[in-house]
Length: 178
Image 1 (cartoon, rainbow, N blue to C red):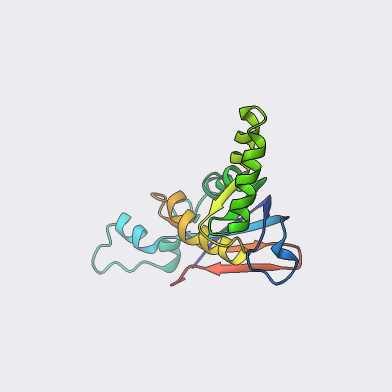
Image 2 (cartoon, rainbow, N blue to C red):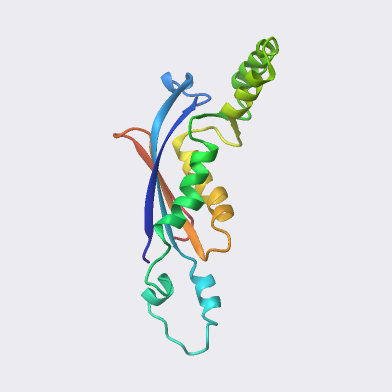
């Protein structure tokens, strides 16, 4: 199958709960997130009416009428901008990380001495995640949770996500069945 690929750069803080080395500390990365999307074959066949006996080539099923999987600008709008609006310049904290919960509560108590904008800044900076924020978990979450929501109705599926944590270290997650 043909995929359309686009990447987005962002800066994110995190800590890996239970890490045996320095990643247990508060730190951050300049991530590069690569998205690979492809046509949802069943959706495409439904769109074409899936007439009996019609033999469609792989290319006909994989591309739109202009010969694309999806316009790169739409990938930016649907996936890259989600990253920009939700994770860029934020701190990802696992909702089960007691250390991060205590820091958040202590900081909130300290900020009560200031005006409401300080608490709002804290609330806008921390993103509580349902997963320990490793690159592996981030990639899986983007493919299985965010991709389906953001690409609903487009006829395209996010099938793979590569997250570069540094220039030397990256992970990839591919949707099951692709």
